[in-house]
Image (cartoon, rainbow, N blue to C red):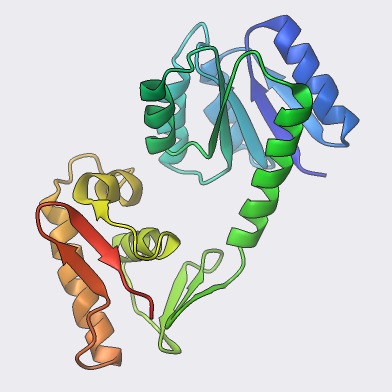
Length: 223
């Protein structure tokens, strides 16, 4: 069964969550501090993280930033801070879900199960119109042919493919595709879009599935 890592400093909440997870057959581990999360993840074997925002040593948001620099493991925030601003911030930092306290253990387990199922499906090759995204192999095919992509070209195109037709701003794309390259600026996105367009046209001359929305960002037409 999957292993769930819980980072929570309130003992009563931790005990309830661990009991509920183990009752469903999950292997559940518990840490008290945010500083323990990344070292544990680097050891491997964690399938999902439940992360309290208000940890005593570090903000859960800061832990999420560090985690997303090297891992795509599913992450759900647990927090008493249920304001819309906090929810939006958590999701933009890369969290997959956000559960406000107090919460039902049954609901939490249901969300964990749903997120694990979705993550398993995301690991399989996915057809998106003329594109095929293979997350495990870090490959993207266009019109049946594999694209020769750099690390950041892959990350940028994969992010657009995950939300076909949605307009993503340069800031959003920069944050999600360049997580470990904080010195990059928004013009970096434009440069990589240009090289991506050239590689797509090399396979299908005249094609331009990446749409520019002036002053807003980019979207991808997969048909």
